[in-house]
Length: 124
Image 1 (cartoon, rainbow, N blue to C red):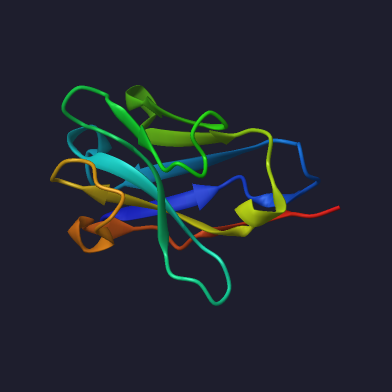
Image 2 (image 1 turned 90 degrees about the vertical axis):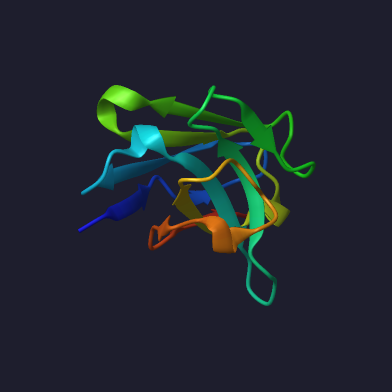
């Protein structure tokens, strides 16, 4: 059974960092583009970052560009999201998702597999 599991969320203060991980089982993650999405209470799901399966290209939303970094560890079937200089507005449930198509931050429906989400809270 294909599955994605996120980990690494938690409570941090503004300016601190978190590293989220997304681990796949039941399918070969290397063949899929992997995106990170987030959803805050009362808001729509937002695409944050994506890493392409084709050439490793990475994409970021304007709101996180320069602060977040996505990377892939193929041997471990894992994709990580390093989040630095966190702000209160980064508070959300973060989801990873896998797509056999290319990267997109705008169309969550193109992603085939989704994790259950991990909560990241930035508060003083």
